[in-house]
Image 1 (cartoon, rainbow, N blue to C red):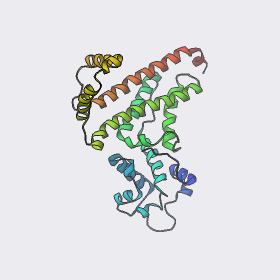
Image 2: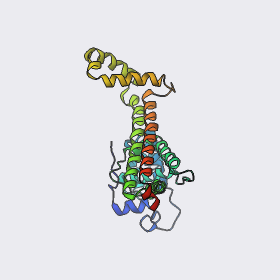
Image 3: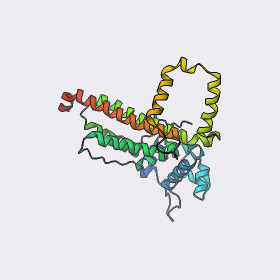
Image 4: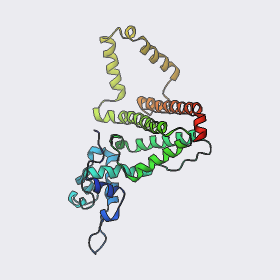
Amino acid sequence: MVVFAGQGDIRRSLALLWRIPAANSERTAPGPKPALSVDAIVDAGIAIADASGISAVSMREVGRRLGRTGMALYTYVPSKDELVDLMYDRSLAELPTEYATDAGWRPALAAWMRDYWAFCLRHPWTLQVSQARPVLGPHENTMLETVVGILYTTGLPARTLRRVVGTLVNHVRGAAQTVVDTRQATAATGVTDDAWWAARSAAFAELVPDFAERFPAVVRLAREAAIESGPPADAERPYLEQVATDTFDLGLAVLLDGLEAMVRRDQPLAGRA
């Protein structure tokens, strides 16, 4: 399930995201302060999404969690479209915004990527919010401001940095999605990873007996990697989750090495920046 941001009323969505009082008044008449608020509604939506996924979020379910009807929420948030935008942006407020670059850009950038990775695993539903259309909220922009601020210390040109940001975000989200899928596979299918592989390994060996002859490099890689890796480091964690985590770590090192090579290659340009 992919969710695209910005499907609600444009002006109302932006007013809610940026908490513009004139367009986001929660009190229209004198009297006691209302029991509900935009923040309470958004927090309830995030709690539901964290526990059961974004598909479980509805105005009715959020209202039930708050002890109100779904209709009672519409005074504060026009629809689920705006609610999802608000949930996504508010969740990003958890990310740190300060990274010291005294020791250079590389450790700061590595720390940012690891913090973003941990965020994605805490809130797996955020991976379903497509990056094709940004939410354009304050916390989404703060996240961007943070990583761009680190990257500007490399001295690389803007045209390069803009693509680097996308590469880094895609790496984190892609690796995190694999971990999330691994965690959800057993519950979604009713079959454990071990049972799934055991059944297919037996059938595969019978139905494709010449696999090793047809794909010798693939077989060699699997055999040699298994020998070099040894037994799983953590027997309690699913094997594929460990593989995905190792892939994230290795990919992080490769990306940082590549970026460092670009900085060295463009050092004259970096010195003039």
